[in-house]
Every structure is written in structure tokens, then in C-alpha cells.
Length: 356
Ligand SMILES: Cc1cc2nc3c(=O)[nH]c(=O)nc-3n(C[C@H](O)[C@H](O)[C@H](O)COP(=O)(O)O)c2cc1C
Image (cartoon, rainbow, N blue to C red):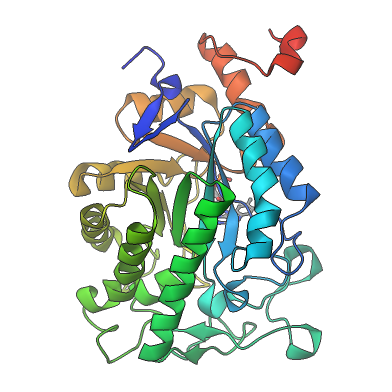
């Protein structure tokens, strides 16, 4: 480990990340029919130019029904592969690793884009029937989901596998499984949203069954030399919900399946959780899962400062920091952080005359 481990390369399987500052997935609500466009090129491309080690796309749906909103990106056809390919190529050309967060929103699908309101998009405006482990809505303003049958679970699993193959075709080098924030996989994990009485509900083993089944199938479809991540919500922040102890068990199972890194977020499955939001408030989850599940982790949530980010990696609390809003404010955060921490990093050659 160097004096500034934030800028030490990280190697997972056959992929080397140039540093440990990763761009967190961020929905842009700017796609049509799931197809990314110029906005996504500039948004993701800028953060690759800014020096991040990994640029992860926003939650990208494995099927039309899996979109959070009608304006989400997707990866369910050859047309999506074609639309992603130049964006992925540009990100890679800047020296960043290109990753895709694959997602299915389950009962939190078919909702409005944030600047057009909240809650359900009615069928008359293009909304759709949502799917979930159990027919329990997220809250009264959200759509009423239909419980998935066991046969339909097989179909959803096949959609994840197909999206994984499309991701490979598009040139992505990392797949992150979205198991957090109250979306479909998290809905299965948490007893607050999973009320099933078949093999997919009840005990912890049963609640983990579908997410692990998907993780196993994706791992089998994703080349052995490429890393697989999973983003989880380490806790529901609610009594009787998903918690850190269960996350450690899940982390171990994910490691056994061949997942390489757990991206440790929290919350999102119940509306009225009390969350003690403060700088680095989710870092203890990354630290705990890293230690007790024996798997690499990413820390996310209110990491905004170079010294703070470096201390997380230097302290062995996480293998990488995953940043969202600070990278919206400053796409060049990695270049600025390197300067601040006294590390020499390459700048894009087009920008060399501005290097300080
Ligand atoms: C505009 C925006 C969109 C987001 N979309 C996603 C998403 O698609 N998938 C996801 O896992 N998290 C999403 N998040 C959560 C972030 O990835 C991150 O976990 C959260 O913002 C906390 O990190 P921060 O304090 O660095 O912003 C989003 C956050 C923002 C601000």
C-alpha cells in the first residue's frame, strides 16, 4: 500500500482499475425506450475524462417492466447494445473501466421521473403492471404489484442472463447487480416486502434464494476474467427488516458464487425509515461486510472529500469509494483529489495545458 492508497490500482480478476474512486450509479431519467443517447455519452464520458477508476451506468433495466420510470436506460435488445457501444468505448478510451448496473425495479417500477412528480405513472400515460415477490405496494402512491409466479421467476432470471450477455457485447467490463434500494432483489431479501410462503419466502435462506439464483446465473454467463459486483442495502433501518447480520450472510454467499465486490448502500425498501444521514454514514457497513464476509467492498454515501475518501481506503474500511453527488458537482474530482493528496496522475492529453 502506498501513502495514498486511494490512488493505488485495484485488481479484480483480469481487470485493473487505475484508482479506487468509482462513479456510483445515477439514474438520469433521459432515455427513450431504454436507449441511452447523447446525454448519457456526455454524462458518463465526462466522469471518465475526470479520472475515475470505474464509471458505472445508472440502473439499467433487464426488461421494460423492470424500469423505475419510462425514461430509464435498458439492456434488453440488440438495439440497446448498439446504443451503449460508443458510450462504453469512449469511457474505456479515457482509461476508465466501464461498468453497468443491471436492475429490475419490481414494485418500485412504473413511477414518474422526479422532476415530473412522484408515485405511479397511470396506464393511460404509459405505466405498466408492476411485479414483486408479494402483492404489497411500496406505499399508497405507488402501483399495486402482482406477485410473481415461480414460472415467472425463471423468466426474470433469463432476462438478467440475457442482459448480461448484451452487456458483454456492448463492451462493459463490470456488471453490478442491483440488489439495493427497495428494488426487486431487495424486495425478495427483506421480510417487510417478501410475504411469500413458498421456497422463496420466509427463512433467510428462502428470501436469499432468488437473488442468489440470479447471481449464480449471471456469474455463469459473465466471463471468468471480468468482475461481478452486487449493490446491497445493508439495512432497512427498520425493526423486523433486513439488517447488517443478514447482509454478512448474504455477502458470504455472494463471495462463494463468485461475486467480487459488494457495494454497500442502505435503505429504500420502506418509506418511513429513520436514517441517521451524516458524512460517511454507510462506511461501517462496508467495513463490517469486508471483515466478516471476507469480500472486497465499496463504501458509498456522503463521501465528498479527498482526505475522507483516502482515509476510508487507508483504514482498510473498504477497497474503493463509490461516489455520486460530489461527482455531479465536480466530474474532475479524481484529478483534483490527486493534486490535493500529492499524487501524480495522467491528465487527458487534450487538457494538459490546464494541468496544475
Ligand atoms: C441523481 C441520482 C440518481 C441515482 N440513481 C441511482 C441508481 O440508478 N442506482 C443506484 O444504485 N443508486 C442511485 N443513486 C444513489 C447513489 O448511487 C448513491 O448511492 C447515493 O447518492 C449516495 O451517495 P452520494 O452521497 O455520494 O451521493 C442515485 C443518486 C442520485 C443523486
